[in-house]
Image (tube, rainbow, N blue to C red; front, top):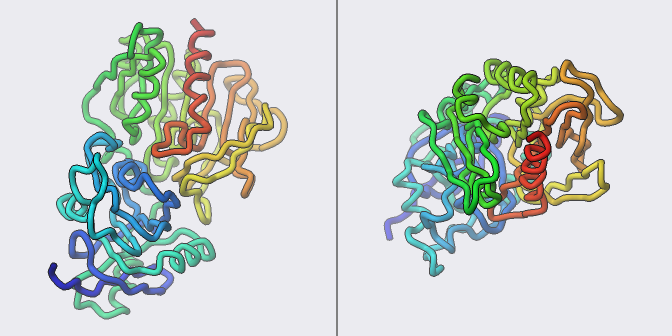
Length: 372
């Protein structure tokens, strides 16, 4: 095994963590975020929502189960960089087809290992989300590395959906008898989403993010789905207008994560950048209608600004905040009371878990069934 070179993780507040070169050697930039799952690193890597982000894994030992084709959430790895403390030297799982480091290197992902990820995570929790760079095999001084990080793009104002969305429509057929048809707008959709709808007898037509209303109506859909995705939702004005046209027609709409933020804007609310963002698989969310607490998976740095108590008025009738985050009272769900539309900020399709929110796909089906 060749000797590892020194590598540096550089934050835009000037703090530097030293480690070793891992995966592809070079330099990369993005927004520093952390993921708290002890499993599911492959789903994280292939989740388009992480495009433009450098992911820090809080679990110390990563890579022991390798990589396989079945668990991929999309067509490629999307993260801008990957940070681990103790990468596994072997892959030991009956489903493993490739090892993690080789897969990252072949995908051009610059990584760093040997970092004190606990200290790094605590620093991000204290100081908030920020830009970051990973440098390996570099002769730059510390001051030069910090300068390069501070010149890299910020997440605010970033329009990334066009980079992750499909270019042509595809169809995921229903399993068993077809019970409904959904037009899903791909803002960075994960493979688990159409699969879970398919298991409920829903035929899912996945459209590019810039599809026109006329294209969606060609299949006579029973409902419209707005997927997760990366970037700043305030840059998605055309998609917001599309959702308003859909709501005006009274068609059922269900949005998750980035799609929730688009839905919120369509109702007339602003979105804003969170200081910390919500990451990982252990976010407690209160369903206000039932009092039930769900443990949910998140990856978002933006949120919808809406009144969490009472009923609000929109051009589409009355609405309310349906879910809130119990850590900070951030809006986690919206629903219209006079039209069939709702959204949640988290991931009901979460893989490798938790699965507390999977019922929302059943709710979407029931809303469509009631509409029909």
